[in-house]
Length: 332
Image (cartoon, rainbow, N blue to C red; front, side, top):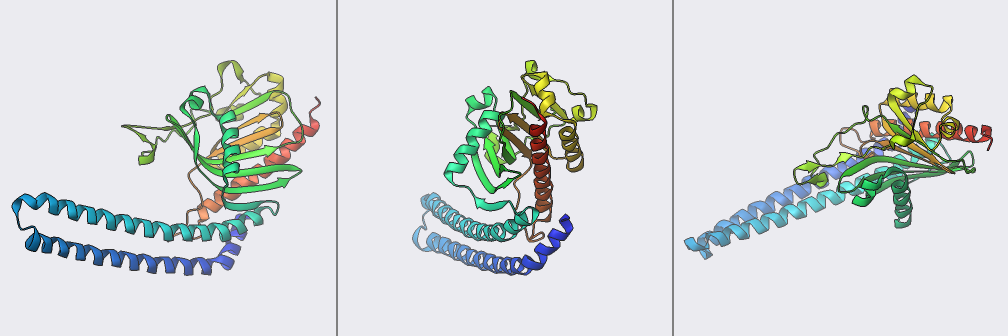
């Protein structure tokens, strides 16, 4: 089914409900901001009353300022928490209804949940660190600050899990989708495929929660050791990716022409940076992109996020088929 068809179905089935929720959110926001304005005006009145009637002494000026500042901070904090709680409620409703329905329409084998439990997070964090964190990153202590949007299912007898993560340490961060495919055959050695550093998006975002003094964390690339680098007989593939493996023959077994062409086509079409590692029975892929599924007033169904999600899920499903075929055809 094409994306436009899926998107129209979502609009038909969920558009009206989302619009009602958003209108309710607007009214609640107006009401809360109105209360804030009334409270702020009352606070100013109290300030002048205190200044004129109670603290009409020059040396008490700093006390007046302190009282006013504390009240202002309390009001702003309450306003932020109220608006944040309403926004989270709207976002959770969107995910549990729209995103869940969308994922099941892409492939009925997939199940979606908006949140992760602690055991899922612990397993995924360990897997991520073992495959995508070098010694420097491990020493800096890479942790999942966020893990949401879990998609799980079994396709072609292989369990697949996908989650949206924000992994950070003192030096680097990674934000995007983390995929794990569990195969049924223990392949020899390992193969890493990293997006070429010349094409990697080092954005160095200036988000306050990523600041270290006056420096910013850089997005964490998958670094391949020089001794592990392998050349592949595919010039177009090598424009976008670098390959690392414990053995040239192993790399050629893992990276069939079909797999390389599938990766190149996706990279060129969607301009999404991604890496993958195939070790033994496990295949790990990470897609570098910002947090998904955040509805706005102008885009309540999150068309762009859903379109990216479908592209990635379609890529993963085809990749899964190619991995299964490669395993069947590989003699060990």
